[in-house]
Amino acid sequence: MEFNVSTFILEILNFLVLVWILQRLFYKPLLEIISKRKQHIEQTLANAQHVQQQAEAQYKLYENRQKLWEQEKQTALATLNQEIDIERGIQLEKLQHELEQERQKHQVNLNRQQREFQLHAQQQALRNAAKFASIFLSQTATPELEMKFANLLIEQLNASPESLNICLPFLKNQSNVGIKITSVYPLDLALKQQLEHCFSTLISMPLLFDYQQDVTLIAGLRVDIGAWVLETNLKHELSGFAELAYDSK
Image 1 (cartoon, rainbow, N blue to C red):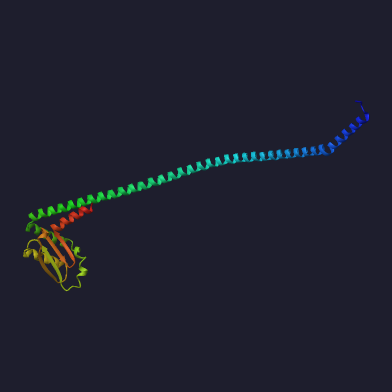
Image 2 (image 1 turned 90 degrees about the horizontal axis):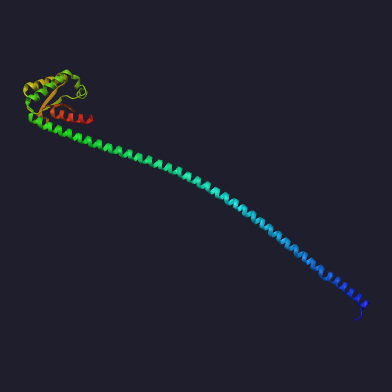
């Protein structure tokens, strides 16, 4: 086979035309496609990197917020525990104060009940003592003892006539003043005259005397002048002794 120069040149020309066609119609668009694909990939990578950076930033922000929230939670929990301790202390102190008040109130009521019981027992004892003394004296009382009470009344009225001043203003408008004299034993005439003379001297108005007997007086006299009463007898003295002893407690 002979080497043909013209054919060789034509082959070269065909090759160059082919290269030009390939470069014109295929290679250049392919480069452009590759370039665009590369740009798209780079843009996608850049976007992905940007998203990743944003995600990392959000994650760091979340971590910071998580730490801050944890600190706030611990602070709030510590504050709450402190407030609970303070409130518990206040409520405990209040409860102790209320319990102390209730204890004091109960103690006061208990003391009052004990005093009332003691006073009642003492009063009953005094009443029993007065009753016993009344029974004993009723068995030993005599007209002579009653005479001594009557003389004592006359001596007191003569020594202290002002003791009747309280009842005199209320007797002035009465035409006759009734005086009832009660005794255990019958009074003799001389004693009656002494009593009537004594009252007539102290009360300067007409007097009407009425004599009665009452064995419950034990011994002594009871004088009723209107609404006023003069007691000089063992029954009144014993009752007064019991009441005085009770009031002095």
